[in-house]
Image 1 (tube, rainbow, N blue to C red):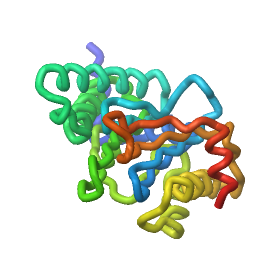
Image 2: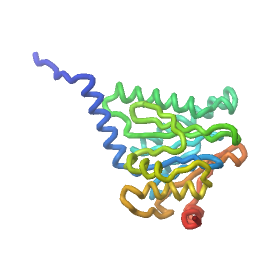
Image 3: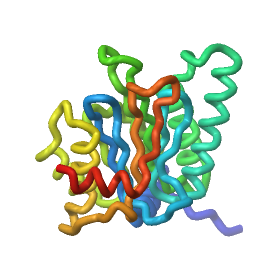
Image 4: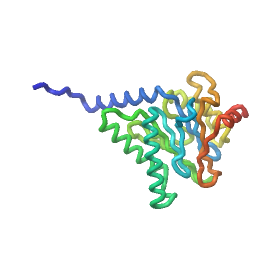
Length: 229
């Protein structure tokens, strides 16, 4: 009778983490920055139809990097959860924190119990309703780890280099154009290149809008914002 090979739990988890990180690193990065009137989301994404940035609910946005079909499935599950909760209770009961906890449980379960982990990092962002209410940004890793971010955060790709660039230049109170320009500059900083508007996907959570705060910014408006320093 042959004996099965033994692999320590530590090695299994390390191998899964390495696999997920390599898959995520092959994708293009995404940044989220707080600005004076909300949160700006800037992603390098040449596709006009496969979106990395999406609205989830009134004040909540979803962003994902890595394997598209996996974070798209998570996004759809989050939208359904938000719709059911908002309909069953009230719209105020739908929060980024609750969604982030749900995503963390799902990703943690898959990472621990499935053969292949999800190759994704996701962000759930919620803009404050008024000036006195803080924004919330929850960065969730492939293994279910949740990080509560402030100011800015970077997902996927060359995240460390982009984070260093943002640390050097980010300041509180940016306007929306300044936030988008800074995010675009940071995305191109690892390779010292300029990224054109048609290679970007940009959206904002604008607290000054009525009920639905999410707004997608088209290429023409992005191009104007990039040149109007």
